[in-house]
Amino acid sequence: MNACVASFAVSCESGDRKGVRTLQRERELNRFLAEVEKRALRIAEISVRDRDEALDLVQDAMIKLAQKYADRGSDEWTPLFYRILQNGVRDWHRRQMVRNRVMVWFGRSGNDDNDYDAIAAAPDPAGRTPDEQLQSHEAMQSLEIAVGELPTRQREAFMLRTFEGLDVAGTATAMGCSEGSVKTHYSRAVHSLRESLGEHWQ
Amino acid sequence: MKERKDMAADQAFTEKAKQLFDESVESLDANTRSRLNRGRQAALEELATGRRVRVQWAPAAGAAAAAVFAVVLWIGNQPVDELTAEASAADFEILLTEDSFEMLEDLEFYSWIELDEEAGETLETEDIVG
Image (cartoon, rainbow over the protein chains, first blue to last red):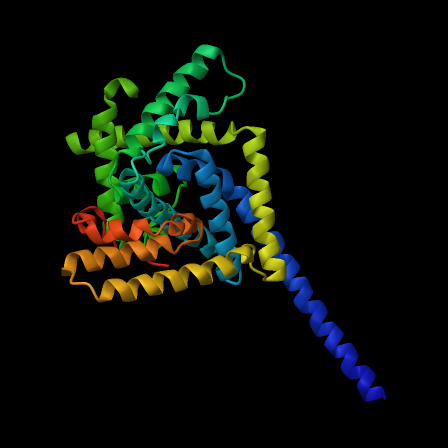
């Protein structure tokens, strides 16, 4: 009887420890996702030019991270999360291509991108005059368009390095390529953007 | 000297880009923030329970897989060139993703796949992992 009670107590203790670990992990993941989600949304939005689609992509990335990588070290989460998100964005573009071809076949235009208005979608910055807001909106709109026109790998490298602030190694993990490739893509992206936006942008 | 000046200009450019980006992030509207929060809670629920969120797709996935299998068998009996076959396989893979099932309802699509001679030319073949 005593052995049975002792066994039950050990079992409960083990279960409690596991429960506490899960709770701690959940809190850590919540902090991480809360910290990264807004930037991730804007990065996805610049890539697909649609906020609703970007929200879906970010949510999918969050769920996949929780499903597959929650037990990894929290320092690994950022590149892993962005790798999932970038793959989601690439898949989205591929599906769009197929959809557009199908829509053309059925005599309908599958391209709804024309509805996108970067100024309307751009948020209102707080604490600045309307002129300043407008200038920022215009500058950000120009930047978004220019970034959106970059080749895929250059766009990814630029956004992960500049917007998310990942280092070269983290960006390489997120993009699934070598650090040398990241440096090349990033350098080309910056030069291309400076050229397309012109000196007046700065 | 020129290289150093160029590096400084690059840095000034990326700093301004980062500043504009951060402003746009911090100014996201309440509705968007709320939707992000709901998405995060769904992910955390996934962690807590380990259950799949979109299980309602399972029956549709089964039906779609069966339909695709039948079509693949049918196409397998037709004479197709190598490029078309490769493109068709890639398209099926894309169409099997969750939010593309509505397209499978119309079997005329498959006729198009067979007839589309340019199918292989527009698909990117980037290496995608995960």
